Amino acid sequence: GIPISKYYLRPSKKMRCSRRRSTRRRNNIWRIKDHVQTMFAAKTTMSIQVIQHRILMFKRHLIQMHHHNQISLPPKEIEAIQSFTAGIKWCEDQSDVFKLENQTAKLQERTTRTTYTIKINGARHHPKELYYDPDELDPDTNKKGVMKVGNEKVEAQIHDYTTRSKGQEGSRPRSFPSAGVVGMLNAPLVDATNGEVTRIQFKNGRKNTVFFANGESQCPIMKRIYESFQQYGSLIEYLCKNIPSELWIVDSLAGGKYLPGGVCFRNGTKGSNSKLPFLRKECCHNVVKQLFEIYAKIIGLEALVIEKYCPDEYLENLQTYGDAVDCIFPSPASQREGQQVSEGLHWSLHQVALRIMGKELNPKSERSQRTAWHYDQGDVATNQLLNFMPMGGEDGMGGRVADTDLMVFEHKNGGQCFRLRTSIKDTIVFILMNSAEQLHGNAQDEDDCEFDNDCWSARFIAFGRKNVLDFLNRRREGKVSGDAFWDIELQNHKALQQGEFNVNDRVSGKFSDKLFDAKLVKLEGDDELYFQWQQDGRVTKCTKGSVFSSYCSTSEPQECKHCNPVYKEDDM
Figure (cartoon, rainbow, N blue to C red):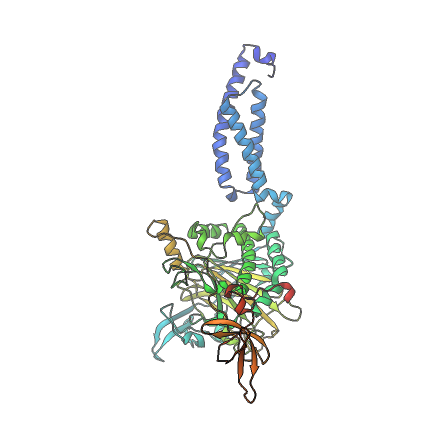
């Protein structure tokens, strides 16, 4: 063992004082141990300077323990030292703060420098207030829908798609006001000129946060979002153009069409239990699956940005959705694929809706693809994440698209508002807002505005559903049981349309609800097409919807190259 010094052999007053100091240090060590465990549990809420100071303090106490105890330590003190050593190593190895090494101080400085705040009804911004009630009866027209800007009554132009009533979801019809009404509101414009993070504060206390990620972003995480989009942007564009037309759904609440994906709680699918949440059938298609896998990587990085700039909103999201991983879409695991191992964050949601806006993909119905002013009463009433990605254009970097600015209001019936520029060249825009409590929709532009008609916008709208969350709350209380049903597959093959086949083509023909290998032929003096079955050579007349791809007879719908193709970058 270590020899005991002469100093410790002298029975003196100094000796007794030294022993008392050692005892106090040992007691202090145990108090600090409890404190350090609390710190590790809540390290994300502490600043980097505080964490660094605490770790230095712990190390200093350990050194003092070793210095003043020149004899063997009792087991409990050894355990305390080992616990400290392990805790310090864990904190240094696992905390993403320490992964950034000497950039941490700069990051905090950048966070402050790149954040801009707009106070609605403050010293600089005085937009007029909107009043809009789609259910109130207008005495002048005897129709539902009353809209006022300030005290002036204005016309609530109706979006065509919102006149198609279905179910009881929300109020219909909904208004898509003219550019003149939008101009009367005098809404402040929020775009990338103010910085990469902009906070908007309403007079009722509500806050929205907008993020702009591009090649000039100073925040390293925002730069990673931009680089991820650069990597997958061309594939996203290719996949959007190859989505089967039958998967698009007309939105009779907000207008336009959208591609849904995620976890639902209604009806069920074949093989699933209608009393349990289930994955939407659109997600069976590989093109949809690929799109949402790419989106998962991007939203996972956005979760890191939200946790950094909006920790309260991130905590609210975690507390609202809890640990119900089976109902989060995209899954937490898929969101973390674009992150470092030490980061491990995700954004909780149930569904994603993809919208496309721009003439290139909607040449005949561009205006109908815009969204009316509405709120989503079926959504969970917390902050939701809306993404806007630039596509097309002469250089493939996107740009301004007509009538795609987003008007975001203070509450359900309007109030004050701001106007968000969502289509910006070479910039990914995303916003945190409460879609269930805030009126929102597209803004019509003036006729003299200039746009690049080759540009379009891919918009991923993430949200939670009240009925799914209600099920999860009941399951947590033990009133129901069971997990969400994700194991779904395509059930039917897709028939070829007229013009997709011709005489002498090798196809699959439908006979008695089964598909067989065949060749299309014509009989002499007859213009009709016939199946010549490869199995026995017999000939049968083709009927409508009976001609399928040659792949269909040799594979199940889920694996069929025609019905469910897998797209690769090499195909573009």
